[in-house]
Length: 430
Image (tube, rainbow, N blue to C red; front, side, top):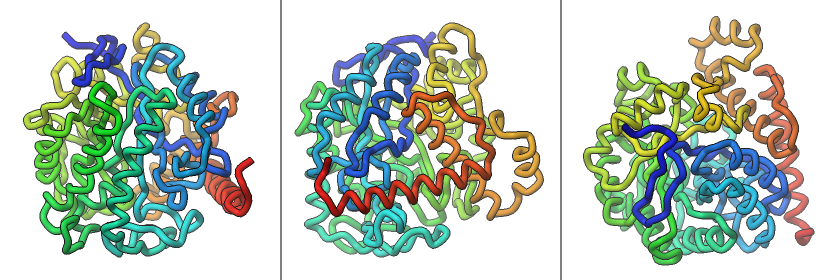
């Protein structure tokens, strides 16, 4: 019977020492020139010694002009190779894997980062007016970005990262090309699903050709966008069948976008065409979807989101629903949670609600039916965990921020970081 402590051999020949992965989480720890820092090394050293067999970085950008947030690392002619090497060394100290997640945010880049986002089509992101309307990418820009994904993968390999993950979920650029809501093109990159998937498939082909056959290449894919008329679960199953031919070493299943943030365990707008009660009833958000993907996928599967107990993790692995389980938010406050679970010292993983003040928890319980409260809750959760990651990077202990303080502190940090980045863009790197 498979358990979380079992090793796992990937199709490329590399072996993960166990079945637990730290899933990607945005770190926001880059310097003003978007280079990796000692804060990355400090945080990932703790996660390395925390027991997870695989660590996946937060999204590393291929375009320094368009970021998911102002503290992203970007690999785009801005130097910083020494910082990447230091990050890779620290993040693999305990013999685990460290993979770089490679991404472009597409239209999901806030106004305080850029007023010139881009996407497959000029479709406005409907979220608190915090995002400028994107412009439609040209064919030449798409071809350029395919080369950039491959270039960043090679940079990661040469710096000491042991694999890469191509981010094609959560509404970012590759994900938005897959969705007919955001991709309204009439050329070879839009229209039929096969055309909408072309960008992702070409990125994977270029990446594999660049890094070779024995270097792990993974993909993060939405099981469903949970948006009416968007990328559906049936679309996902078809894309997975095409991915079978692309030598993918691990497929991570997730779901949702900024407008429908299932990835955070909240519903957002209720415009979903598909609502699976069994998914909500289970411990893991996307396990039902992984079960059906399993019937068509020839590559190993990783499921992230909602796991809260050692029993639930082992059951998902033993029943063959996935090969690797991803943990994210619990590792922000307890970086050694995997090691504690392996030793039987932790059976239930910590949650956001567990760490909230009683007053905040009661207030949320009374007002959770209001859409605006859901938005505050979502931003507050995101900010709370980002602040905890920052404390890992600073080498300080976790802080019991309340919801309102976490929201304010996170937003202030974002604006200050954006200002520092703007100032740095006007002078050479230090």
